[in-house]
Image (cartoon, rainbow, N blue to C red):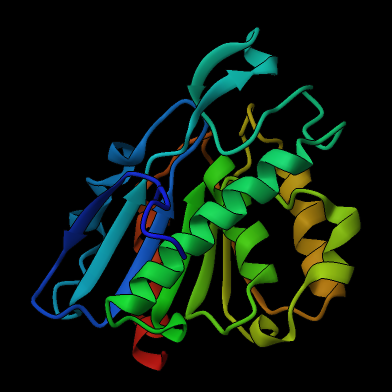
Length: 226
């Protein structure tokens, strides 16, 4: 990788000296890395030295929002998110996230100690990158998201992450990303022989305290096992 390679800007926070794990957490459409910084304290993981990395997606016009320029991992063209998906944008963001993973390797965190996490569009990217990653990850967390390019999943998934734990959670009153889309994504993962920890909550397109508690429990299990 050349010295002039441009990494995505990211908020970098460690919970202790010499972090053993990295949680790379991707935000949703129109937000930025600051969106989930407050989650660190809520997760209550004090005994585990972790680097939280919250990257900022690139600024780009988003068709569904009348072409308004905002931070987005990929373009969305229709309210049916799977219609004419932005394949180029998805794969471009995939490469940018892989570059951050490689940099974590250079900073002493191997792939098997990295969790890919995200909310909404960020959840899409966590699944998109994690399923295709050629080295085993500690875990994949997708909150209020779905699987993009479902017709390509079976051909592009990598055996390295066949046993990687996957956590999916969704609000059953979500009016942004319909929970049926998440159900379909979960079923696709089952068909591909992935093990999925699934939670749904009486909420809209957001997070709730019960969800944060479930995430904390899952992470404590995953990180100790990594």
